[in-house]
Amino acid sequence: MDSSTPPLPLLGGIILTREGLTGLLLPGLSVLACLIATVIASLILIPYFNDPYKLRAYPGPFLAKFTSAWISWTISHNPISEIVDHLHRQYGPIVRLGPNNVSIADPSGSAFSVIYSHSSGVTKSAFYDTFANFRIRNIFNTRDRAEHSRKRRVEAHMFAPQSIRALEETARVHFQVLLRQWDAMCAHAEKAGRGRADGAIGAVPWKVHGGRVWFNCMIWFSYWSFDTIGDLAFGHPFGMLETGKDVAQIAKSNARGMQAIAQGTSDSEKATLELVDIPAIEVLTARADALFVVAYLPPWAQKIVGRLPSFRSGYAAAPKLAGMAVAAVANRLASQYDRADMLSKLLQGRDEDGKPYSPEELSAEAWVLIIAGGDTTANSSCALTYHLARNPRVQAKLQAELDAALDGIDSDVAPYDAVKDLPYLDAVINEGLRLHSTVGGGLPRVVPAGGLTVLGQHLKEGTVVSSPIYTLHTNEVVWGENAHEFYPERWLEASADAKKEMMRSFVPFSAGPRACLGRNLALQQLHVMFATIFRRYSFALENDAQLTIQESFVRKPKNCFVGVQRRK
Ligand code: HEM
Image (cartoon, rainbow, N blue to C red; front, top):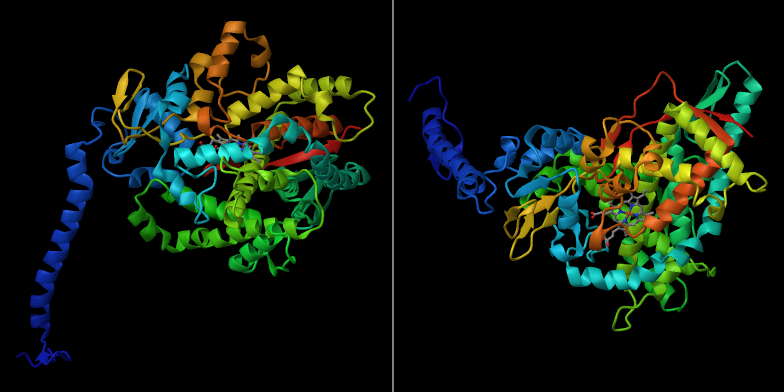
């Protein structure tokens, strides 16, 4: 033994020298290398060469053929809908996005119609499992056709046109609060004249210069949207608009919250619930971003990635968001206030056996209303405001239509009946939904037994297939050379045939059995919002600012600073 290499500590009665340790380590490392090679071969190479879904002929990024890590990595580099659009321009109508995942896009929208039709037999893919917040699935993330049909039956009444119309009066209150806050900021601009000033409402700063008040309208649209959906769905706004702060109350203990809901639904003595404050929009965004990145990975890989520090806070948000729904439902039930809101419709809903939702299912469905109704409407409103602020010609034309239609109507908030059929307002809203494509990516579906033929190509059972909405909304064949411009006139100038073609390629709310249930509510809210704020204010952008998008399931504008001035 070399006297310069001291023996290592005793292990199981054996004294190890450094040479002895190296002798032990080398075979260990070889075993590890073999193991890694076997894992790579069995998880990546064997499936690639076996090609069980017969996708090898389809083009796509090199790494996407071998691993779904490609799409996760791409999503984390944002925005995925624009990247997929670019790939379709490069490779054609069919692009391989993963080992068993293809994206299909043709200008006429026929691939979209086939995939998402009632008769295709497709189901939502495992991608949606990632978004489960409760043990029970909700109407958005359930993949089971029978369970989904049952939920649609229970909830049909809640989303019926007359039920949505009945919510207008309640929604009006939140438009009024938004106007009050914006009027207060505009008053600073009027006072400062051509001078400068700054300040904040709650946590949202504003600045005055050039005769306008400048603020980030994305934040205000989020507060408005979350307060409105909180009130419409649970009779209780979160109070974000009033305070100018991203705060919602959640149940401190979800188990205790469920108990309170059960007591509330059984009309026994109402339970009191301990609540804590969280920054709801921030938590929601962190969770949506983290989950969207991992949703295409197999479950074992999601578990590993979920432990990485940058994903931990997104994952930890799940119980908090569940607690938000639990608290909202429990609060609503504990209050003596009874009115025809969305929750009362959920409570009255019965399946074919006459059974109501359990407390957990109620909370799961309540959670969907908050998520689906909050973020989508806020993001669409922000993007639409951006395009109008950027296009003074379109803004002036819209204002002329609104001034004429609302002349003599003594209400700051536009009544829906007065604005629901205004041709230019309709065109502006359609154009905003088209160009921004709030849900812009492909919605992944699994091909059923027997396969599915799309654009003449037979896809095998189990293949994951999608058709990207953003690509459909921006292809030049249907929308012309100015497809990437905000040009509402296209909706009014098109011939009857061209309009038919446009409508086939216009799917902001998706189509078929899993299409958006909140479409009527969203359109009602957007009509009232844009008639109200563009009649009252004029909007400007500074230096032709660009809209930067952070994409998870929805395309969220990161910020949108607008300069606002009172017109009336
Ligand atoms: C501009 C606003 C909105 C847009 C662009 C939008 C878009 C969509 C899209 C594309 C889907 C299909 C998702 C998929 O297949 O994975 C969807 C589903 C859904 N949306 Fe909306 N949505 C909006 C507003 C709302 C509102 C306000 C509510 C309710 C308060 C709502 C409730 C739902 C529900 C419950 C589903 C699931 C339907 C099902 O699977 O049966 N949405 N939405």
